[in-house]
Length: 316
Image (cartoon, rainbow, N blue to C red; front, side, top):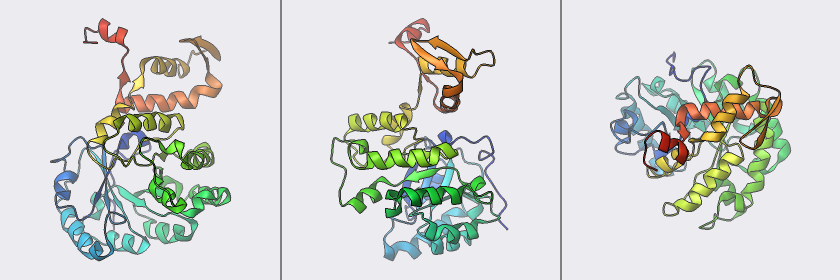
């Protein structure tokens, strides 16, 4: 029976702790070195992929390779480790691998009501956490997303759901388009789709992560997109290459003034409404934002202003 669970995945877990997860194919030769922090030690989380990053003819060899690597995984790495299961049948094979208890959980791709029970019936009674990915044609159906949300809110399911992932490239593929260079996702038809997913899932307490940015030579557009991710209330952004990780996570540092307002809004003695940094602060309507900001600050720190850096004796 699988009983091991990462102590970091406790009731106090924040999705911000996952940072910018790096996807990598399950047949990657240096997979064990990365999993044990000997390589790419800056990773907060990693996802070993048995789905899109693995060709059909490579599935069996990838699972054998992953199974061998699992036996060499150390028990307490400094980052979270997940596997993206290709489908419910592959999840069954993964759960039978020796050492699978060293994994924190699974990413569930192409997640719909059709595969809901096929996944969760297998995971029942295990300590694994899951991140369902929203990336099928049902995502464009408001009623289907509401029904999926209600299913995830079931008492037997909800505790295992860490967050939801938005599969941007799969959704664009369904539309027959690819993100043009120099444009963020929010300048494509997916801007509306992301808005709808946020309004369906976030009021019920689900965190959603941002889709990948597929270009490696356009940091300006990446940084613009991350700002828009945050404005839409998304948490974290999957990286497709290690060079993206510091760029993504640097953008999650909290602005000094925002952090001061968040602390004031969550203080016990805070008045119902007050002015701070030329902005209205209202405890009743800004408290959830403030709490999320503080959780983000605990992971990424405060982006100090030029004046504060000068006072601290730092170069500006």
